[in-house]
Amino acid sequence: MILHGYWRSGASYRVRIALNLKGLGYDLSAHDLRKGEQKTADYLALNPQGMVPALQDGDLIVTQSPAILEWLEETHPDPALLPTAANERAAVRAMAALIGCDIHPLNNLRVLKALRSNFDADQATVDAWAAGWIAPGFDALEALIVRHGGAWCFGDAPTLADCYLIPQLYSARRFNMDLSPWPRLLAIEATAQAHPAFASAHPDRQPDADA
Amino acid sequence: MILHGYWRSGASYRVRIALNLKGLGYDLSAHDLRKGEQKTADYLALNPQGMVPALQDGDLIVTQSPAILEWLEETHPDPALLPTAANERAAVRAMAALIGCDIHPLNNLRVLKALRSNFDADQATVDAWAAGWIAPGFDALEALIVRHGGAWCFGDAPTLADCYLIPQLYSARRFNMDLSPWPRLLAIEATAQAHPAFASAHPDRQPDADA
Image (cartoon, rainbow over all chains, first blue to last red; front, top):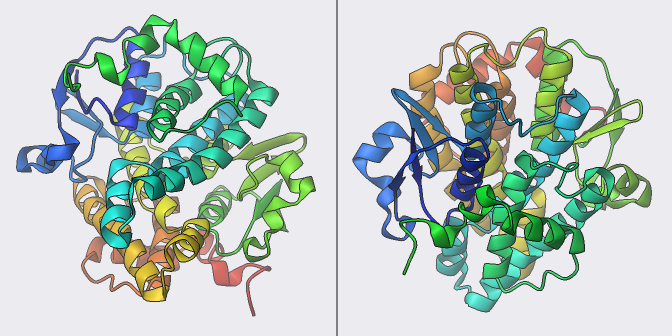
């Protein structure tokens, strides 16, 4: 398989974690978002949206990280990243979607660029904007983890929710947020840092990362 | 079941469509987002995020529309809103996520309020912001529908992708967008307008809608 990604893309980071957890090898096709390499004609022919990540498997191209993660779960079910019971699967997916729909879309690169160009936002304003969406999302996540979590977001094994959480924590740190209000999130992050699948997916360890 | 929703919430609209397509009755618990009714203590005890929709089924509360839709699909599989083959399921989910992650989060009420309060954005600026995310998303969707679509986003039966598309088109109209660049999306909208499950889910037909 080929993962079309970018080292600092949070959505690419999610997919790297899942591939690693499932023990699936892949080749990286890096697209530097700062240079607009996700908008080349060749890549647009694969993915008309011109965004990363996309996962290529022979003639198949799967776009959008939520769809990629569900596809990986269906085609490579072991180890499972969703529980078995529908009610529990819903709890994991809700935590994933809270991050994937209500936090990350508001702090990704294209949106921050738009704030700068449309509203002359400076770095402090951009950081405050990002934190303004991350903080209430993390508050809700912390409450959901009290309800459902253990060593990980849901119970004592990593799930799709953790594939979303760890990249979002990385992103929050880039906006210089104080994360001490969310001790359960930090505990999960510490667990993840010691887990090879998460550690090797870290942006700094990717071949396309800045030196 | 009880659907916690709001007539103009695009994510609530998605869930109404899916419930109708599956022939599932429900009671509405309306939360007027303009009055902050999604932040009451009683509702926060159910859904710590204080957002709609949430679906309540006995003691179970499912939050986040992507999780609700997948839960409905797993617990009430007939009629199916996802194809059978993993590759095809991925295509439907990718279209859904394109809307759910890359369009809708940038034009929902709380974000537009933040643009007004943080950047003194006026209505024209807000409309342009929303259109600036909707247009490239619709461009990509139009291309994906060429690849996968028929009478609906994927083939000739409604799927989860259509549950996302129709509310997003409603939203685009509220921002006064000219939708003529996307004839395939408009053709699907016309098909949906004639389908009872979609027609009865329309915001204007909800009991909590403005007169």
